[in-house]
Image (cartoon, rainbow, N blue to C red; front, side, top):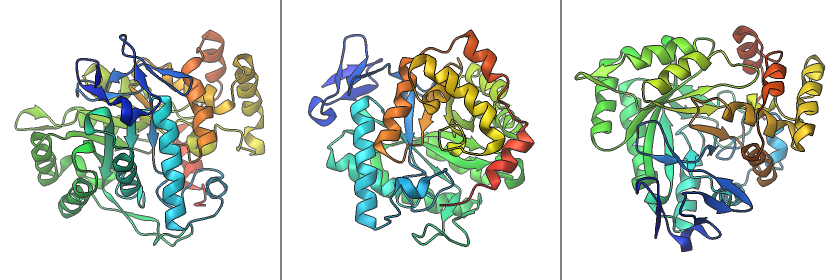
Length: 364
């Protein structure tokens, strides 16, 4: 049994397959090199790129081309096998953070089944999940409502118990799913006290944020305390080359000791070759010119732009296929230089425009 980073991150050679640890803490596997790091001050060891399971745990999602990724084959066992293949590829490449949610269909169950099947020990991986949305699509790609948001205490109690039952000792980070000022969750003392109780039992507690007011929500979360102790250990937010507005608040969170996870780094596929919107054509050409300098795909360049932020601990790949994951992982091996930074400054949209566009992406 090998260890890295203060004994927090342990790996079984048998469980890891092709993975091995050098004396410097690097994970080698599948030709890539991943430097393990600690998530803020949580003590949880993670990889700079994690895998989010939003597109793997249910038939429908808003990513461009999601239906094609699943070959429109939503039979349960085949979807589970497909998810396990992507998880295998991630593990072999050194990915050690996996992110699920109660509303991601069967994502938690797929992940738990894979961990058991591969005999991966709890100390070898960090798993995060979320509460606050209930999956309501009935295993259909098209549904009147795919998920229902509710940040009340009964939902927390029910979903925390469900997540614990499924993921057991693997679950290390539990997050409020899409906290916003409108939900009132950061002012609900009963919810905050229950989260503090869960924290006292060993889980690290985080929140994910969304929408135009992400920065304000992050700053509000930094001031949340229970019994005089700060509640949140981690924040997860959308940050990408089209929507960088939360950056200053995330830098403040990092400086305060919170872990920082970035989601939707590819803007639900808009920062990939799948974006054929004529209004995006000029920006796409600029991105592809820069990507060609390094011999990588557009998505890898966009992810490199996220990894270059000094306040980022983990950026999530939302890959729904093995080839997408491999393309994303190329981001770990290329630089982000001044020329890229200058190019990126011309890509950003206003938060209002970005979130309006995202709200119109079709479930598929």
